Image (cartoon, rainbow, N blue to C red; front, side):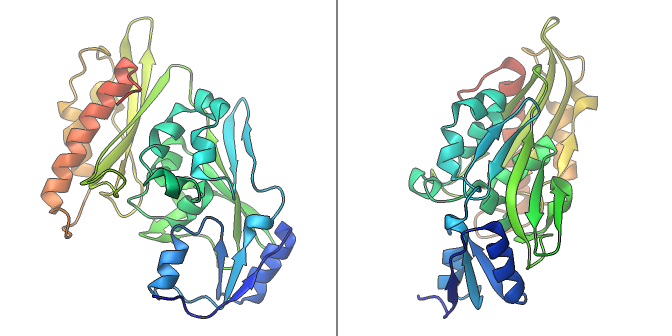
Length: 290
């Protein structure tokens, strides 16, 4: 299929980009990687009158690693962040999640910020942003604001950005040195969206080899990424003999998956629990090769 007709605008600055969005009067879309938007256009599920192509906008392609966070610009590709050594050292969960995103050819074009504002509940990066308590910075012609992760995701494929706003960066806060992370998911085929997945962070007392806290965000089983605190069930346990039964039960009670053509709600809930138990064990023991 072919997309509906639209006007292509190629701004060179953020000001030009947000001006074009404002003048589109709610009928504009931002093109960065295009891996989500172009299929929607081709299937006529989106019909913007103006496409604002930000690939030529200066200053949006940077990755900044600070003492507090990893900040990713709006045109940074998945592959760029996946292969960024300093970002991986600061936040291993980024690469742990990114290697599950589709296939390398998609990661070569798709953008990190684009994935976040697309707000697909089956995507990995929204779950990571919520797990870390991050935010997205957005700009309009008249305003600039930061949107916390928990306020960003409103419903499946719906974020809280206004039509005249451009997301210019995402900030992923760094974790404590004693916090370990892991990502587990199960898909029918490599590169498919996961039937169920999870990102976890486990706080450890390395001197005593015990867990002091834990939290998880699921992928593909909730309408929006939702943080589940598991510290009550895991705190005080040994890292190498973790009993995850109570934590899995709590998490399964916190999610409400639905039936679809790929899996029943009950099967997806079961898979979520299995993935959670494995991810918690990975993080507690420091495994990063799962």
